[in-house]
Amino acid sequence: MLQAILIAVILSLSACATENVVVEGCEPSGSMQPVCGMQSPEDIAALPGGRHLLLAHFGGMFDATGSLSLFDTQTEDVKPLFPQSGITLAGAPAPWGDPKCKPPELDKFSPHGTHLHRLTNGRLRYLVVNHGGREAIELFEVIGEGGNISLLWQGCVEPSKDTFMNDVVGLSNGDLIYTRMFHNGGMVEQLLSLLGLDTGDLWRWNQEAGLRALPGTKANQPNGIEVAADQRHVFANMYFTQELWKVDVDTGEVVGTASVANADNSAWGTDGRLWVVTHTDSMSNMLACFGNQEAACGASFAIIAVDPDSLEIEKVFEHRGPPMGAATVAVPQAGRIYMGSFVGDRLVSIPDFTQQKSESVGLETDEFGDIVSAD
Image (cartoon, rainbow, N blue to C red; front, side, top):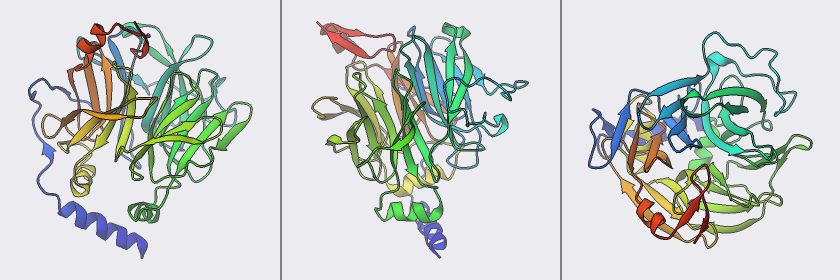
């Protein structure tokens, strides 16, 4: 009965879309430049070197497949990285993950949230939430530089039972912290979410101690997550709770909140603040976009900059319509800000609106473009 009610709710909301939000064509709009002809790049990570991006191509929330690729910001070429035909992971070494976690089924690979970071031993690790075949976080090592990047699978971690994850971050000691968006993502749970009930929480994994829930982090659809520079806190976007939470990674204590509604993914900006992409269109328009995975969506979104200490917020960008709306992430690289989406066939970029300001105050950045100090 509840499933029937939810289906009726979704259909009625989708039918009430205020206008056609599908974007046709691939023309730029002002300073916003699209690159089309790819599967939805739902999450993006900036590689060291200032030129290339890692893209996680999203096939949809359930029962869909995707891939990982390398994007060159100069040539706009897309190079497939994973999975690749003719390879097998059967019997592959898995030193970074849980020994009990089996390799992914490559023909079912379905990436979602990702995180790129450096371990204490200097190796570059790329974490990928994978819904395909079984729910798990895949752990890759980034090998090579520039356009010669490849991904070496180094193991995986399965979450607790009854978990549908959204995003993950890693600590330099090897630990993982992920968002459980739903317990199972079924129709009943989605209806309960629409009614305002909590559906998920934050979890931490350590190779020796295993999994543990971070107490006090239950919320309605935990979504994107990012880690602070000191690695003592994470910033979790609680989508339908309508807040961003700053959480102690050891105790789970929520040490601060910011009023950021419908927040998807986050990334560190060139101004030293956390850039949080939020969905600002109507629920009916967003659901209309969900109903057409291949079509680009023009639903409105905004980038909210959050001070990591004070949690003060500022809207620094907003957009609606062509060449792409419904953004999920905003990542700076090569003097531009690159944005992906959960639907459609493209990414877009705009000039980095903070670059001139950053240069004027003498901000120093690390290899990923994150702010490390100021004059």
